[in-house]
Image 1 (cartoon, rainbow, N blue to C red):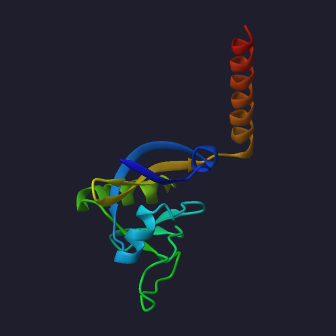
Image 2: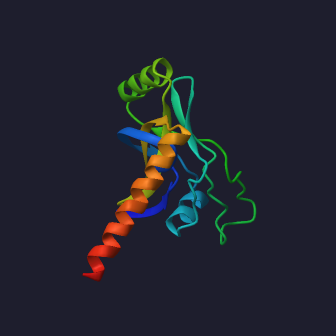
Image 3: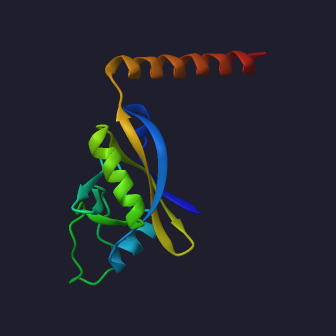
Length: 148
């Protein structure tokens, strides 16, 4: 398993819960671009369209060596592949509890491109401050341990 892109702000902006793995519908040139490491999940999110889940706003640029006629939008919505039962349960949680589906990382598993996403609840400003304070405290403890 090779991790291609991670969403670094996901843990900072959201309190993440249950995680899921889904396949991703891509064109041939998009797969090549992803496997060469040209992808970004920054600012991306998972939306519901009917009874389908879509990865929205994920940046996958055109493959450099692709044919001139192969064109796609870099941030177009891409369909996520999950079982129908999982999709229905996610949509139920998503709508009733006011939660968000946040992509965490994009990776390859054998030949396939997969997305890991989680159910997240947005953090408030004071929660983010607590996260920063905890991270700073951990760093100072590690520094002190290294000096001894």
